[in-house]
Image 1: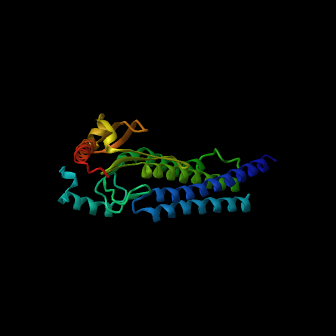
Image 2: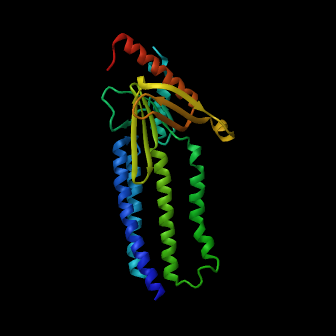
Image 3: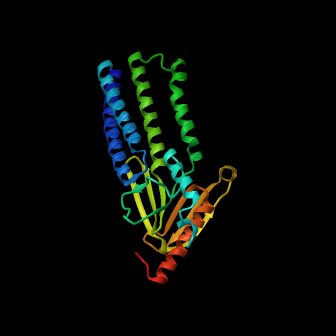
Length: 65
Length: 204
């Protein structure tokens, strides 16, 4: 029973986290428009990897919990 | 004419430095740097952000956070937790570590101070979802002071440049920037140049 509640809480947390990771991607895109210093591709890639990592953990949690 | 406007040997050196080091904290006449509200004729004289050494605390914290699960999983703390939950907890921990690293790095990277031949610009990136961009014309600058104190700041030659203006934003604080004395000198030269332009009626 307790692990069922924890599972739901984890999934809700991860869902919110994916939204947050998406906001980060959007914000990095906006900031690279505000300021261009020749490091934009790497930053966008970094934020995109973060988003993929968040989605992967959510999918993984759904499968194994 | 103040020396900062002349194409000196120093300028050529800094241009190549910018190409090699996009994470530099102090650049004079940077090549390849631009910002959203830049006018076509506006020249960037100085590009500043916090000194690299100010990143050490969050880098150490990130390393500790990366190593923490290795130590915790070797103890008996998580013995009563099912192994699949332990695995997800570890993944969530690394997710939070990544977010902390990203926020710290982006906050440092996008918190920049730009001095152009016309104005000073302060781009602030407080956290991952809030940004603020403010600027003031060079002729609105009323007072410039710089502070340098403490062992680390003296050792690595960085400090705060505090600028008071008569514009909507009364204070511009360039915090923990390298070579604050040079920044003050550049601002002083620019103010003199602006005054000369005003006297000669060459204002853009």
